[in-house]
Image: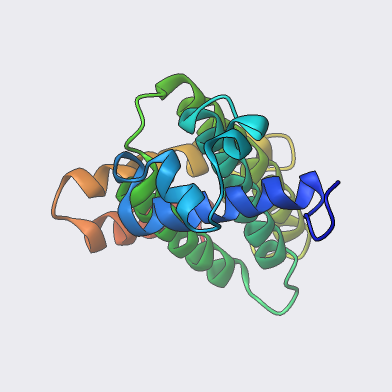
Length: 195
């Protein structure tokens, strides 16, 4: 390694961080490999040492973006001070924010298969944590025995709620009904859980 050169893993992450920032600012289609390299006065060879093409760095950006989102949900769900309703409200707000960020800046690629894979991965992991939240809420009485949610079906209900809410929140960006979608999801979840 040249004197003053950054270790490869640090340089690669620096490029990913720059790409994320530019994708969020300008949208995927409006960012070139040259734009990413211009931020650090890098040469084309540097980029292609780490990535096959722009889509390759996009995939890594998306993986890190989704991991950050999941980590945020985990922190929220582990907060013992929040009620079940407050956690649901926060989850919906975070899902809306992430859906908007994705729609505004990261969804412009035509890599539908990878996008679907990442969305499914996040939703499944989030549903697992929401299922655990439901189990605790059943145990502490926040979800009453009259609810359709019980200890045997928490994962299925969580998957249904999270997937449905995600679809509703993502759909809002193709319509003008932004607040109605969040409110509709919230009311539906409260009703379903009987809380």
